[in-house]
Length: 65
Image (tube, rainbow, N blue to C red; front, side):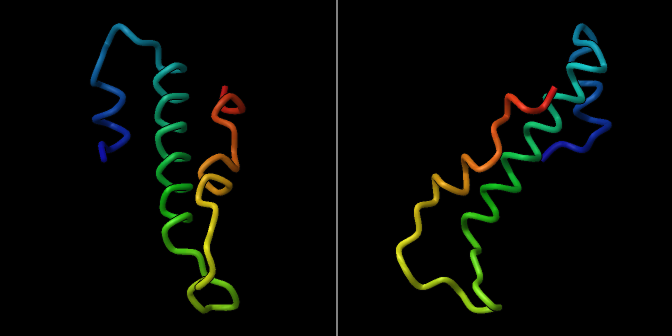
């Protein structure tokens, strides 16, 4: 994953504000993906079938503005 600095300077045509929004969206997606892959209940792995989409879609990216 790119660092904030690398992300900022990848396309000088894009505004800083838009770059910040895209960077935030990227990190939210990665955080939700990670959470969906490592669910623990009371410190123990969750052993039942899990609807990963319920985690992956838990926070709408449209909220990042």
